[in-house]
Image: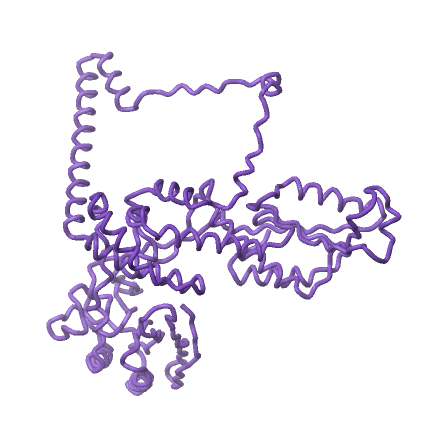
Amino acid sequence: MSADSTASALLFETPSYPPLRRPPQARLDPSLSASPPAIILSAYAPTLCSTSEVKDQFYEELEAKIRQIPTKEQLFLLGDFNTRVGADHDSWPRCIGRFDIGKLNENVQRLLELCSFHDFCLTNTFFPTKPHHRVSLRHPRSHHWHQLDFLITRRSLLNQKPRPRINTARTAKPELRERFARAIDEALENCPAGSASRRWNHIHEAMYQTTLDTFGRRERKTLCAARKDAQRIARCCANDYWLNLCQDIKHAADLGNVRRMYEGIKKASGPSTIKTAPLKSAEALENTPPLPVMDELDVPPTIEELKKANGSLASGKGPGSDTIPPEDVKAAKESSLLGHLHELLLQLQHLADRVYPEAQRAFRAARSTNDMVFSMRQLQKCREQRQPLYLAFIDLTKAFDFDMCGTVQFDRSCSEPFQIRNVVKQGCVLAPTLFGIFFSLLLSYAFRKSDDGIFIHTRSDGGLFNLARLRAKTKVKRVLIRELLLADDVGVAALRQHCSDSLAVFQLLAQSLASPLV
């Protein structure tokens, strides 16, 4: 989504109430989908202490703002309306749901009339939640909790059906898998060969529709009921087991049967594990034969390797934002889908080779950490030539391997982002590749106007130790060495101390992307 926000403010000035500032209006334009744009309005209504003129002026200007928005666009009205709507669902069935709390106050009439005229609804009251999640303010004198903050939207949006989920249990049937392989081949015959985004959108829509037509939709109610029953039975069995075990231990202790008592305690605590760590001598390490270099790891992945990785996908995992479960991808292993995915993966690696600078030594073929160590030792020779050497080491504390954020998707909505404590799994190449592309572009933009660094004179002909040939005016190349990259770690080298302009630009870019520097 690309957001195009235009600021608008509603001001109220009265002698008895301070001016009320209106937050901006935001318009979300989903350019990659067929959904209409979404308008978000944030408001703060006058309190009960305000006069009727102030309240009428607020709702008149809010009414004028709502009339400017087309009815085909999605509208979300957020804020503190200083109104308690109560639980009068029978009088306002289109506006108020059955799950509100408290009693109404004097400000409710204006808000409900506005919602009834435009067919709006207070979505907070339409969904069953816990009682402490329905309130937002505690009165300072009565200590009663009230709901004053509402999310108001069009009533028609509540009737939209979410995208159906696919019945992954039917992917185990061989006849349906063969039918799905033939259908996906036919759907991908006219796959566009343009940009990667257009190609992926075509593959995603074709795969989802084909899997839905082949395997059908999943029955949520049946699965939810069965899962709840299984969890309830498991909890009851576990509770009965521990109660019986505790009663046996107590009964043995009362009778003085020490042996049976300790047997019950041992059963409750579980078997004890004996951990041993064998010692390795220096002689054994010296006699260990060295392993050969695995050059095949530098070769681009083949279609056979992609099929093998596809077959090892874990089943039963929730789908991502593309709503395609892993069982459907595994069911298409005999179709042309893996060929399209293999081409997209090769395009990504080709893009990384074009964007990566020469100094990037991590997750690249024919490069290793030894190259960076050698380069650093060569730069230290500046001290032998009595020239200053300044090194700035930068480490992103929130890169691809630390403090990631994730969301939980349910139907067509996503939860608030939350932190993921565990890092990227070993062997994951996609996340470092995507981050390396982003990090390389970030560095190139930050140092695009800077000539700071260390220039080295070099030539590839002649003797290696003939330093006189480096004084020639021709056949000599000047190579700039500035960044020493290894994944998300970078060292910036320079011959002068006052080269902080480019580092300041890089720091501002990193802070704007929520990646503080160390």
